[in-house]
Amino acid sequence: MRRHGCPEALARLRRVAVERLQEGWEPQEVAEAMGVHVSSVCRWFDAFDRGGWDGLLPVPASGRPAKLSPRQEQAVLSWVRDRTPQDLGFAADAGSHWTARRLAAVIRRRMDVSFNHRYLNDWLRRRGVTPQLPQLVPRERDDAAIARWVRHTWPAIKGGRTWRARPSSSPTKRA
Image (tube, rainbow, N blue to C red; front, side):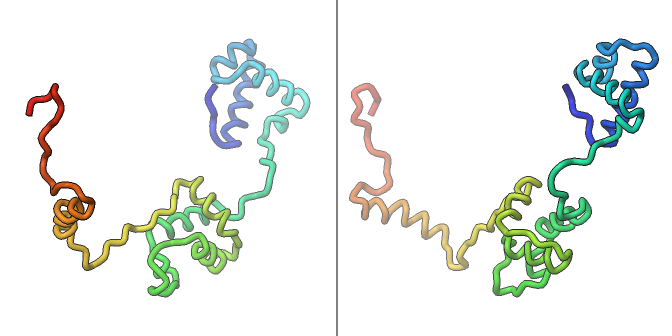
């Protein structure tokens, strides 16, 4: 069966299902038309019998409420994706990448909400943000010199021949 979205959308779905039953539809017909299981349709009608239209209203989610509103969440995610820590007050010599501790400090300073940095990593991962450090490349790096070393010097150190194709010693292959 498919999911139907937010609590308000589910309440509308339940209301329409009950209206169909009141119009004389069979529970199986309503279930097929709504894309839900017939037991859900029967449960909704029972809730309507017990509590009227209010019995079909969304029930608040259990558990601890979110620390950040959806708007605040979007702001935090935009900081991580579009800005550097220096843009939000960190010293340039502290590094140019985000850490969970830095992000927790900015959230605390700007939104007055405390997050444990260990939880914050999980929070970011669930929203599609994974920690990635930029690949550091030394200014002195010389790729041509490295390639020469790998091709000529390393085989000599290793004790093998220099970089050349060795003749095949296999009796089944052509030499």
